[in-house]
Amino acid sequence: MGKNVSASNDTMTLDMKNATTVLLQSNLELMAANYQIDMAEAEKLQAGLWPNPTFVWNADLYSLERNEYFNYKNQKLIQIEMMVPVTGRIRKARQLAETNVEFKKLEFEQFSRELVFEFKKLCIDSELKLYLLRNYEELLPLLDRSLESSKARNSMGMVPNSEVLRLEAELKSLRLNYSVLKLEFMDLQKQLRTLLSLKNQVIVRIILDEVITALPTLDVLFSEAKSRRSDLKMLKLEVQMSKQSLQLEKASALGDLKLGFQPHDKGSNYVRPYTGMVLEIPMPFFDRNQGNIQKMKYKISSTETLYTRKELEVRQEVANVYQKILLADVEFKRFDPKTNAALKSLLEKAGENYGAKLIDILEYLDIQRMYLQMQEAVIGFRTERLYLKSELEFLTNYTIN
Image 1 (cartoon, rainbow, N blue to C red):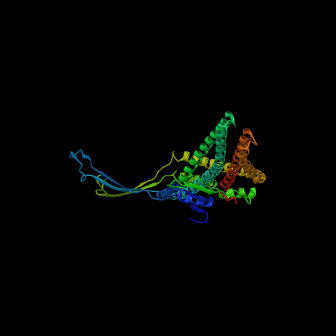
Image 2 (image 1 turned 120 degrees about the horizontal axis):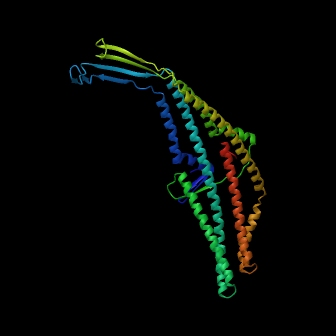
Image 3 (image 1 turned 45 degrees about the horizontal axis):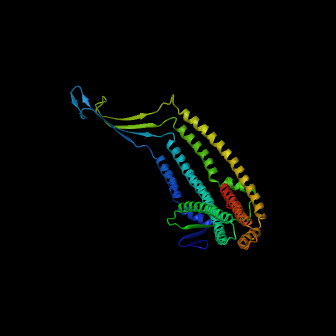
């Protein structure tokens, strides 16, 4: 499956880049959303069509003179009429529909960005939850052995019942925590499999990249966000669509001409048979579409205001996450892996020391709790740092290496 993708009967391992590629290619919700673009293309086709002509048949229903019904030979009128747009309404409607196609493409891009962002957060949660589960799986057997040893010594009168009870309570508490974490991990895996459209119950493993080698300057990130973000482009396009809608409303103010042709008229004119023509011109003395035109002008102003506000919001969001990453990097560099290794070594020896009565039960349990608290703190920090990196990439639509 490639250098960065591997799979077995029960596990599929990908790096984040390949996982994102699989998501974009296989997510069913994304596929469904893509049809919105096809629907907009169909609307563009419809917007450019002229209205169909109308065939009019007017015949004698009842003749008072002859006392006859449905005598079309006595009097009839055949007419063909058609509405002819002369104000550019169809052309402007098509231009608006073309812009709407571009809007739907940006909407799809924005949906893809949001989906990838949520997917990355799920991947981070799943991997670090699994890391914490592994710590519990290392700790539980140690405590279980200590409990069995204490029970054996208790039967010989060497350990009081209260000490055995303390160990049993601690073990049950850890097992309950482990079960809760396991259920949370299973739920995260279910969501990942759903997003990736996987049918089998594989465990999805993601190789997380926690290294930030080069963080661009804030000005560069502002520039990238302004030029790359699809939601900003959508708002700018909304301004354009509002202006096009205004032109369409103005074109609709005068109305369209109606042309008609009467190839045959028998009985309704003094000339029999009669061939004539029809011309209907709207007279907009009262309704010149004033309300809709004024409404579109307000909409243009509203959309331009929202675009300005969005730009300011993006600048604040990017600056906020940028400062958080800088702070997190300072704390990340302070972390010494040797401390964690020393704690793990202390934990492994704690069981032996407790069995040899070199430490009492309180110190033994305190070491275990200290180790778990340290792991949870480290995982919480790693989670937040990875969240911040993903959020900055989402806010700027720019890959942070």
